Length: 466
Image: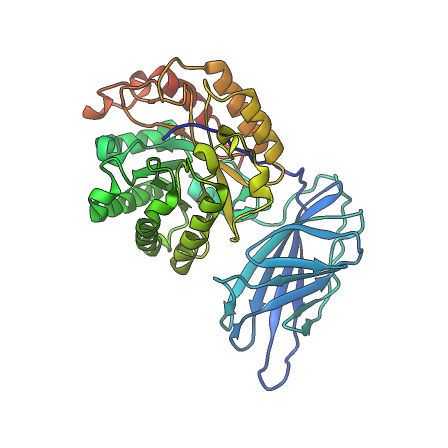
């Protein structure tokens, strides 16, 4: 449930959207062929971001390696996703990951990376797939670093967050939409379904989507404390139903495997594998799902958390290879700060998986300047998601700290860090957004909000910058 810190950042970015199409000629009896779309999606002074789409036009491939050479040896891949990236000299290599190493005829793999540049055009002249050259023409980048341009990619259209953004993915240190644009989602977390299930009905969810204009609903499914372990089938079905309710209203859903006591997620490893196999299979066709695999690890090392993540993520990827996965961090998801550590343990030893983010939690009255400093620093290196924050103390009680909450939310807005507030419930605690007794009725208007609820709603309901 409570505590901690988070970080994310944005490497300054101007969108270029130059797309280059390269076709591989037929090769040998296998009639091999491929297409590579290389797109510079952002560029800034000293750096750039590129998307790479590899389409197999020949026979099925199991195990592939894409290579290309930068025109300038000073250009480097800084951080890549959806493949295992490496570089030797000016030549970069992307090898297929576990979930996309097999490409059927006509299948595609979407990759990407952020890179550094000395100022030259960061467009490779050619590509090779498994040693076979892809030839074709490439257009020049016509802008210079730091010059604003507009994207040539048309984002999904629609009035809801889901309709506007489609399938999300991690690009660099950002959460990005289907068009590759960095976005920030803002929403609310449920309380434990075993205690406050009555709070999540048609009227309350309509209010969240239509009055609050929330982008996401975090579904907090406790594992212990009379939660999932007592009735796996009911809790799994309820989580799936809420994912569907969120989708119907155009909101994203964060499926939260809410571990707190005991704090070592490995205690629930088998339960996690069973649960995520079920919900991933059920929701794989939906574009609104994000998986949060461990709420607030505590009393456990980063190595222990990393080991857990590297066993659970493949279970999700088997059924749902495209969804974003969020990994909890040490010290109640404080990036280790609440345990006397910091983000460097993650930076130096990241989870071996792509399309993932790291969790940061804070409670505004308890976590202030030193936590914010860590978030600001870590934001440049790690993709972060504040899946839980409170306006009060880490206990969930105490007086609303409006000044600290405002400072925190201003920082998250600046860094485009997505967040969910604890909690959209009528719990008898000051962190709750609804007054006690609200969920026994049918009114979820502004008159039912606590001081915390009114403050958070005022921030969430402002227009999104999609």
